Structure formats: C-alpha cells, structure tokens
Image 1 (cartoon, rainbow, N blue to C red):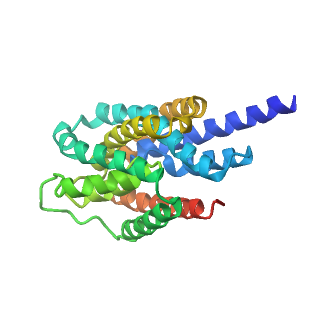
Image 2: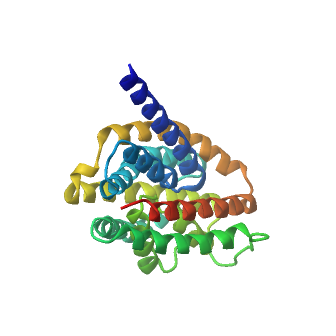
Length: 264
C-alpha cells in the first residue's frame, strides 16, 4: 500500500510539473524546462539515482515533453496570429545545429560549467528586461538579424540545460523589432524544433536518459495547460509581458544555480 501511495504522489508531482510547464510554454515560449529539470532531478535523486545520471535524465525528460507542450503552444499561437514561416526558416537551421551541439556537450562537459555560464547570461538579460521602464518602439522592421551566429549559440546553451530556448530567443527577437507576442510565438516553434533535435541526439548518445513514463506524463499535462498560457500572453500588454518575462528569466537563473549545487 505504501508503494502505491508513493507512486501516486510521484505521478501527481509530475502532472503538476507538466501543468506549470505548459502555462509557461504558452506564455513565454520557454518550454518549461526551468521547472521540469529541477523537479525531475529532485524526484530521481529521492529515488536514489546518482546525480550524474539524474541530471541528464531530467534534461532528456524536459526536451522530450516539449515535443507535446511546445506543439500545443505553437498551434494555439498560430490560431491567433498565424505562422511566420519566413522568420522560422531563417531561425531553424541555427537552432537545430545548436541543439545537437548542446546535447553533445551535456554528455561530455561538467554540468557545473554549463550551468554557471548560462545562469550568469540569463541573469543579465532578465535584469535588463525586468527593470526596463517601457518598451522603446523600434523603427526597424522585424527580422532576425545575425541569426547565423545567434541561433546556434542560443540553441546550444538552451539544449545543454533542457530549456526550450525562449529564455534567450525572446529577448533577441524583441531587440530585432518583434513584438512580445510575436517573439513568444516564434520561440515556441523554435522550442519544438530544438526539442526534436535534442531527443534525437539523446537517442543516439545516451538512450537510457529517455524515460517514456515521465516524458509522456509531463508532456500530456503540459499540452493541456499550454493554451491557458497562450491566452495570457495575448491579454497582457507588451510592457507588462516584457517585465514579467524578465522576472521569469531570473527564476531560470536561480534554477541553473540550483543545478550547480546538486551533489555530484
């Protein structure tokens, strides 16, 4: 009886994680990895799984669940504002290459190096957005300038830690003339492609990290809740969404710092 109660508690925890991740995916286009990775790592460590196994498994679970969560977010955004195929075609190649490199680095570099660098970068971006008094209108057209160098960096940094890419991609797009909602919608689409490449790479490099149960449980819950996040993204003003996103980025940074202190 105690075993079933324990399994039920774990299942409810993963469902709760998935629901939260789905809202964040729809609202900010980030895939929900900032919640999924620490939560799944915590669950695995509680079951006695070594940290060097728990963290890659949590990252793989985050990427796998994004295939469902981000897909639902992309569809919900598409129903409201359409699909910017021109921007997607310019962003996708670099994001895919970056995602492949990021997963490879996850399995070959000490995670403390990855987490520390990413946490510092996200903190700087988050503070800039959260403390901004207003969004300054830009005179230039919305197009992804510098995508050839920016997207591989964004894709690799995000895939290393199981995040959908919105943490860095949304600010990059906003600084290139995109409105907040447009940037979030594109980040959701790029998050799905990043997740796809990440899962393929894990299947080749470390297939044991792909656990079907957590991936499906978190992913289905996230897919159900993603439209609520999309609805919020379209109701909030650009300035408010920008500041709120900045605060979320600071949470992402703390999540990465939490990973740094995960015992080896």
